[in-house]
Length: 370
Image (cartoon, rainbow, N blue to C red; front, side, top):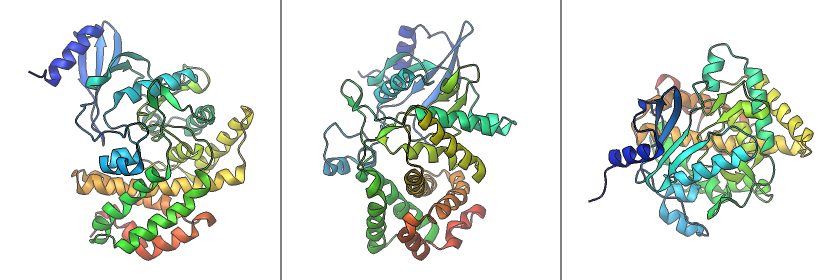
């Protein structure tokens, strides 16, 4: 008979020497992962519990776009799904760069169980909310990102390629907006002509930035996934979590994840100072970026990410019953509306003005979606 999950967890913790630890489950969010804080004889660790059947699988290496699409959204968008081996490998890569990903104490990737270093409770979002110096924290986060702005490895572990954040993945993400926001915001499905035009315009906007080698992209680099560790030196003072969906992509992506945060307002002057610090840090490391081109790249990937998040938050509301995400939509639409003012996105700006009027974008702040 197949062993049940609680028994697997107990066996895993026993083997790791943590079976008798006191346990305190952490509240969940939008993912299927569960975390439990463990305390044993004054030492702390975190149990990452990722049920292997909770999500559709990632595509195998070498899979065609058609195969990826047949396997579902995770495969085409290149999300890790329930693959804990990717979390373990990405943590090792980040630590090798001198950055503060959690140390891995034990792992049973086949059953989705990982025992990791507990980086504490000092989330950026919480530190700033309690009066922490946001400028100092964001400066450090920008400097840590600069360390990752080098060509990414082909593999992050034997047999584990670091997949490219390619056109198919990026377009699958923006498709979430037409698939899920239209029914929520407009009360109707998107027309096929609207979907096709949206995709074509995005393909044109993204094309100039998909030809160069990608860097390691965390993919969710924001104040809820960064820990403030001031006792550590240099870029190691930025603790990183939830990087299992890492890919090789644009160096602008993580920077705009940080400065256009869906869960909290980031003042434009702070966002600008953070971008400037990132560019300066790259230059100091001998890896400068052309400022004008990089600013255009930032605008494009900011808009792409925000379009995706609009779709994700609408899906969380409509499919999963997590209505609290509707309250975040106006902030994300605010970012996206501003992003679309960039000259590189004028054609997309026109599409959004025709297909998603401003009053629809911001109605959900008071729960006024149709």
